Amino acid sequence: MKLKKARFKDARFFYNLRNNYENRSNSLNTGLISYKSHEKWFKKALVQEIIFKISFKKIDCGYIRLTKKNNVYFISICIDKNLSV
Image (cartoon, rainbow, N blue to C red; front, side, top):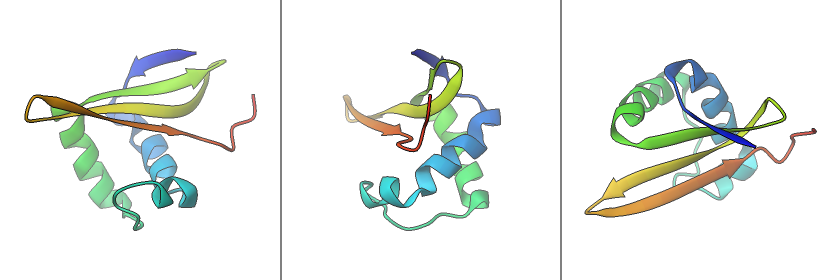
């Protein structure tokens, strides 16, 4: 397993993973999001948050995101359950 710092070119991967029905049902925001609003958020998040893409056997399979609020880090983890390696 490898963790790589997320880059803007990863936006589509994060968007697809985030909009997956099961992932949305386990999120604070359960609604579908548009790609345009996701790109805007992702660009900002890459600067303000710590985001890693998870890969296993060279296949992207999830992410870990750390968001700092009032000196506390909140951790979001999302894994693609449909991954077949």
